[in-house]
Image (tube, rainbow, N blue to C red; front, side, top):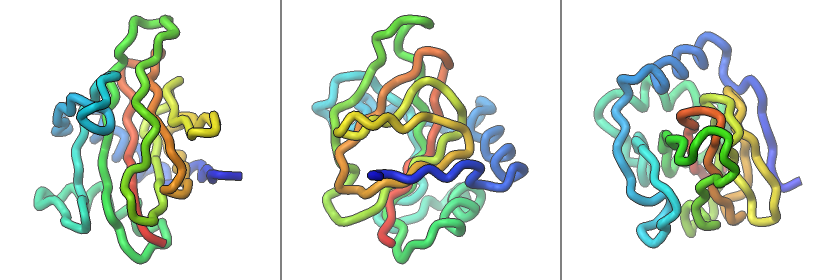
Length: 168
């Protein structure tokens, strides 16, 4: 098996508060014209980076959002934590899912975790064709060497997840 899914990753009350904060309409999302790198022209997203190369944002988001998550993951170093909001980019019911290129998040050896904030038919696809479903409060973990891509949803207005990169 090339991945692991941990259902009910956060205690219910913590997760529901996090979900409300991220999907309640007042979270600070920042437009990114590409889903992965600037050459990726398939779709766009909104994101907020709260940890990048061990630098933590100074708004307190890491304490509120990051600590409850990373405190449950055995790691020696947190590299990055990014919150993604993928708007639906097709008409409801269409089969034309926007998807980004296959990629790795970074070149150094690391582990990837994707925490689903809402359930939808969007998913993360591994290069071997494995589909990692977007299920609320589920953390999917896989080796950072595995190329993967985000595939958009058609059944919900947004797909929200938290992408975490760390060294074990």
